[in-house]
Length: 256
Image 1 (tube, rainbow, N blue to C red):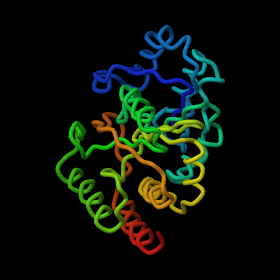
Image 2: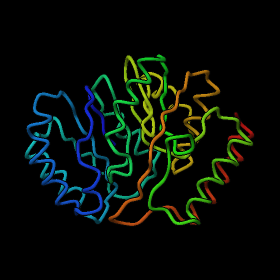
Image 3: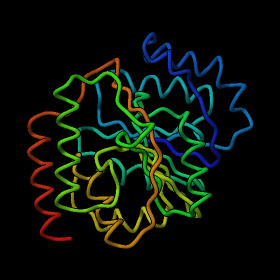
């Protein structure tokens, strides 16, 4: 999860997703980011649930470059669920804008200006990234993964009427004064209100946040994004997550 007090874009050229290891991406940030973001007031909060891919070691390298006040590692001993990771990270967020995003560049920071621009134009409480409108899309998924995601969204649209086209995305931004969903950007006060009413812990959490925000009357806007599947590592989406999604869908249908 990442959060910044001021926004910038194109932190890492997207082409490097296909070429570089996590270590090389850290080197890229050191060579290009040190000058580019020297005068930008930001903090990055990394929530890591004991992953074996070296994430924490890379974060510690970046802390040496940018300082522990800008790069915050908030590790947990084991996988405790996506929802609790959001809550855990939010406790440590101090800036005016908060961005929630996957750290593998599936959610690319180049979209940040679009989210902030949309929020400033509409004064929305939430701006959410969507793959399912003109200008949005997915790259790198096989047909089955596309059908699974699309089917999950169509089913939720039919049963819950959430008012957005992409319920399962998780790129987000929050703010005390203004907020966007990147994947999603929120007003921080709106995010705290919505999260406090959520009961889900896993991937259903993404859907529940938007459904409850809609029911509470928050103003939600959308921005098209292209989701690029990770090159390194594997997706955590499996049969158990799909079952939990369906159970969560029924629960929200009955309780919202």
